Length: 309
Image: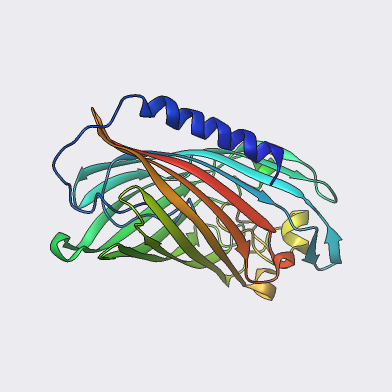
């Protein structure tokens, strides 16, 4: 694990400890409040329940030592780091507004490509419950995100005219188990500049205690239609960029599937503290199941805080 990620993790933990000083209170149980948020695929993998929270996330990923291109396998190595704040505001238990991708990206390869720093594109949208059954601990929701292309091109943002990302997600509780999944698409408004992709993510966790939740997650990204950008990297890359970056690769269909698996945990630091409801800390370690040379992830460490209000 790199020193940079350790520093970011310490910062998140310090925020958690400082906030936790408000103490633990009590209150009436809110439907679905015992369930936790997924950790990986942080831009697109949302819980289906409509709850208000601020989500601080840091995702640090090592880049592959080599990547597959039309020029052959070229050296890369280095890292990509995303630091973001997401906000969801629930108008009621069946509808919420979302700011899903508001963050800063550092892209620092050791070879071949230039380093870059800049803001990511902003995604805004809404989520609504399609089936809501608290007594059975089962909910299905639909979500729509709109991404705007104002981000920095130094970190492969800002290309095209934005996109729309519809998805459907579910949650089912069974005793101490939690099962969650989502299926969605990223549909660009400019098909030349961005690839169209389909994604699916799944989460399983178990409440060892009311506060400690070991979990595993699975993510699958599939290029449905490749783009046709004229820039250097999109012209030679034989894959797409994953959940944070859409390269607009001309050759994305060559290796259209990218699958990862993750293991980690969530810990509920406090419950019902004054104005705030819960503060959850999450940590996950993620690895690709497909060839890491056909993507930008060799491994990823994700740490986050979810402050419910």
